[in-house]
Amino acid sequence: MSNESWQHKFAQANGMRIHYVEQGQGFPVVLLHGFPELWYSWRHQIPALAAAGLRAIAPDLRGYGETDKPDALEEYDIEHLAGDLTGLMDALDIDKAVVAGHDWGGLITWPAALMAPERFERVIGVNTPFLPRPPAPPTQLIKASGDNRLQYIIFFQEPGKAEAFFRRDLRESLRRFYERLLTEEELDVYEEAFRKGGMTGPLNFYRNLDRNWEIMAKYDGKKVLCPSLMVMAENDP
Image: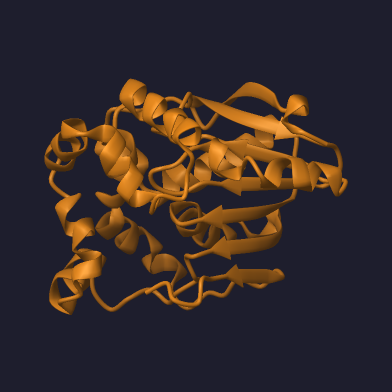
């Protein structure tokens, strides 16, 4: 089964229009991409899942690709992001699904499984583990850590600053994030999408880290009880 069977669709969910790609029939598997990515990041998994008898559904997250891009910063917090996931499931008449999230997609998947456990048959995190709520706001801990590998998150916090960085050489900036794993043709897909849609929506995910920390206080100590899988690269810091 190839990408010739992909279907690009739109759904009205959680007050906005969400673009998604779907292939296959059977039990639904929703695939949430990371930063700075698109539904296209799952291009290899979509046909594989469909060939295995499953229904693969890969949306562009809010602020990305052909999905709507709200203006307000707070509309990118975890309540909105988890609401997009369950809202999309509602729009597609899906009561329960497996959800797999990579990077920021994982940072949506785990909280969503706490917020609406009845909606998730299984959850998968790729590169983003389920972690206990930290004792202080994340940006405060990152600044205090002295870990230079994480300081880009602080750089992303000031609206406009990181956008200007990406605008100076969008293609090369994206290339560095992807660690040169893409062909030039694959990189074209991402460059075109972010040149058209901008980087503010994706960066606003990071700008809600401390707000999300406050929101998740009411779920502190709760566990994800459905079958769960964590996939991690051995040398990923």
